[in-house]
Length: 331
Ligand code: NAD
Ligand code: TDX
Image (cartoon, rainbow, N blue to C red; front, side):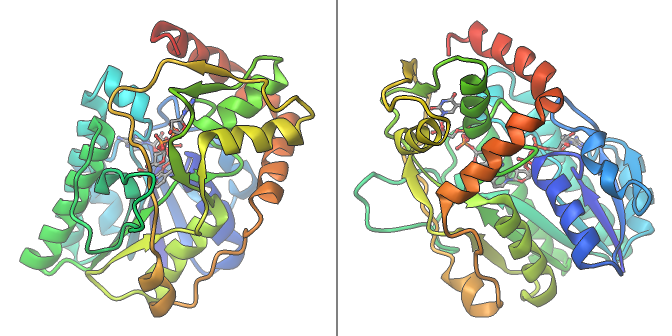
């Protein structure tokens, strides 16, 4: 089977490619990635001889159409992914996330190919801290940021192309991922690399916002399960019951890295900062054999910390650039 993976040089996409290259050796993988600041071809070095790599923009109709014509299935990860960046400059989010998904949809429609679109739980907005409800596939879309609005727009395009044109597609909405190869602009790698450089972790607001954490391998195993066992046209929420507030995460990082529990700094809050995300993944678990394997977040964080500790050359320059950008917005 020929599989086109968009965004395969980014955090989740490169973990996906490395994983399926081992577990699905019969998949012939082509990666399409624009190599933005968030993409690094070196992530794919271990499988370089086994995959094809195309540097290109998913919003370019010509590139997308040529590659879709030559594949059986598209697994779509390519996106601008950072909320803070979407507040500074929304346009790349509109172009990559909305127009990019539109280009893919038109191509898979034209060529009769299958698409899996990866999205986020952020499209559902946020929950109160004490709300007993969690997001389900029936929750109405209610995005808060330009990033989550662009992802919600893409999800709606996929649903419309399924219903109106009979496109064979599935959608997954996953909670916050952590693991190796995550860009240092994101919360967990930012705090780990801060501690490695002797800088206190920085918590937005009071640090009480809750995210539902999942290891990137559990997310990617769920994507494979949906592709192989999911029902066409359906949306599946992916989550591993990992709700924690940001202070709890920083506390675990500080403990694992041998620092006092109060060694952090409260900084200004993110405008429009979503309070809490929480996923009910019953549908995925009922319809596929997927179960999360990383049920011990402390152990998952320990291996993630070890990865950043030994891979400083991978993140050093990105860290300098990312901290310069944070300094400009006072966070
Ligand atoms: P990332 O920013 O680490 O990687 C994105 C990749 O896409 C990069 O390699 C980048 O070069 C590429 N890209 C960006 N714009 C492109 C374009 N126009 N054309 C081609 N390639 C382009 O992001 P990530 O965290 O790996 O997220 C991957 C996907 O998963 C995204 O769709 C994101 O919305 C979704 N998602 C992420 C999380 C999370 O916690 N990180 C959770 C749920 C869903
Ligand atoms: O320095 C920080 N301090 C801090 O308190 C940073 C970078 C973040 N935060 C907070 C904001 C959030 O409450 O930590 C939480 C996580 O922040 P991010 O890593 O920026 O993730 P989030 O905004 O929750 O979005 C992530 O999960 C859903 C991904 O970046 C998205 O791509 C995905 O869709």
